[in-house]
Image (tube, rainbow, N blue to C red):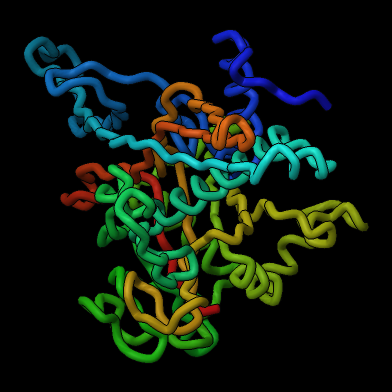
Length: 387
C-alpha cells in the first residue's frame, strides 16, 4: 500500500482524500444510520447555511399544525386565511479536531503498519464515536461534561473539553411532557410522568411529579414500548413515514436495558412469534434492531446510564438508564462541508503528523406545543428505567 504524500497532492486530490475520510467516519457512526436531509428523518441533517440579518448560520425550520377549523358551505373564505406558523431552530456549530503524530521515520520503517492509512481509520473512528456520544447526550438532555455512563469527564485545558464546544450550551433537559419513568408497581408495567431528576431509592430530586419513587424492579418491559408509542401519538410526536404511510418510531436502549427486555416474557413472546421460525429469527441472531409494534428497538452502548457513578445528578441514580423514544426530527445535525485534513512535519522532516478537523453542530429541537400550551421537545421522549 503506497504512502500518501499530502504535500504533493493537488487540491482536488486532497479533497477526495478528505471525502474518503468522512465516508469512513460516517459509516462507523451509529447515529448516522438515522440521518436524512428532509423532515421525514429522525436526525435531520442540515448541509447548507442560511443567510440572515445576524449572519450565516445553520437553521432548521419546524412547521406547527394548523389550528383553525376552516370555512364551511358558501361562507366567505377570503380574509379568513390561516397563516402557517414556523419555528426556526438555530444550530450552533464548532470544530472538533483529532491528530496523530509518528515518533520518527525510523519507527515508520520498522513498522509493518502504514502510518497514514492506519491513522485515517483511527481518526475516523474517534470522530464517529465522539459524535455518537454527543448525539445521545443531546437527546437525553445531559451536559457534555459527563460521560455517557454519567461519570464526570476529566477537565483539561481550555479548548480540550467537549464541554467547550459552542453548541454545548444548547443542551437542554427533557421538557415536562417528554420525560417519563417506568413504574412496575404490583407487577403492572406502566409509565409515570417524571421530572428530569430521578432516584431509585427516594422521591424525585426536583418536582416529584410522578408520586411514588422508582424502585429497582422498575425495569424496561414490553408493555412500556406499547405505552410509549401510545403516549407519543397522544402527545403529537410525529413518527417517520414508511411503506404504506405507516409511522415508525425508534427506541434506543442500553445493552443492560435490552437484557432486561429479553428477560420479559411478553417481549420474548412478541419477538419470537413475529419473526420467521428458526435460526434466522432476529431474537436468536442477536441483531441489534428488533421491530416491535411499529417500534424499532435498537441496542447501543452510548445510550446514557449512570452505571459509572452513584451520583443523582442529571436525572439518573443507582442502576438506571435513559431509554430514548424518537420520532421525526428528534435531533438536528449541522453537517457543513468536508473535513479539513492537514499533514505537518516536525524535527526537520523526521516526524509526521496528521490532523482532521470537522465543523458540525447538534441540537435537540424544542417548539411551542399547542397541545400542551408550553415549550416541549419536538420529537423525543426520555424514559428512565431501572437496570
